[in-house]
Image (cartoon, rainbow, N blue to C red; front, side, top):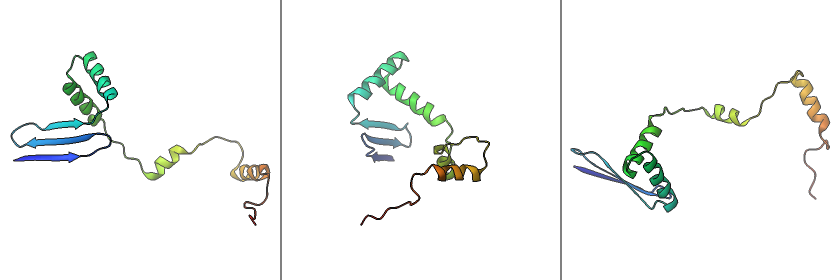
Amino acid sequence: MQTIIFYPIYPFKVAFTHKEDKMATLQVRSIEDQLYEALGRKAARDNRSISQEVIAILKEHLSQPVQHKSATESFMELCGTWKDEKSAKEISRDIRKSRKSKTRFKEVF
């Protein structure tokens, strides 16, 4: 039995073919010339064919453990932190004092 799965992954077209008694085949189409040339240079440096280089890159990438972070952890990485001798109340007071306007929204009309 042969299975063919087609994935239109922008900007590439990827197709996987697998026969039960043979190894799977990966086909990538519509690859940019610049990317293909860079892949060829890397393959030459590593003394591999382009197919062998793609397999090596995939193995290297997929062998790394996937780290799933919670939404809170991801958000907290975006936030800045600092150390201060002042209390939270003092920091809040300083922020309020530095504001130029006491009103948050001005009337538009």
